[in-house]
Image 1: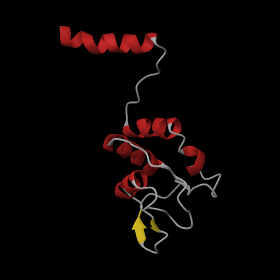
Image 2: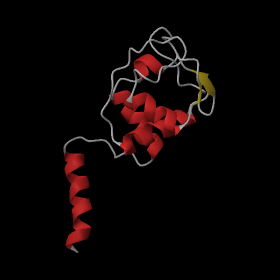
Image 3: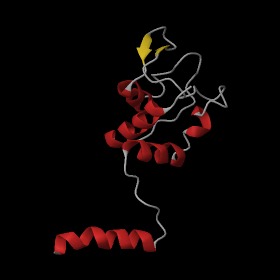
Image 4: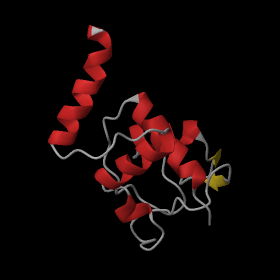
Length: 118
């Protein structure tokens, strides 16, 4: 009984604090993360001078600044977030700051990016 009450109490505390519902899926959590971190400011496709768009990039090949061809997948997203100065697409010159995100958070962001269409 005691173990079952804990999630109910936690939900009540979150509701009392005005917290929205907890994101249920990786895509939902990824959506919240990119908004909360401000990623969409540079990657929404409306400001190409700031950063490459994420729209429709999943499973595409890209050429990085070293001339290497890379596939946009979860590994590419993870490397881009963890080492933004080393993984730079096209003509971009590394404006992105490094982020200290967990593997789960990066996987959620990748899940979100995978859903975006051109």
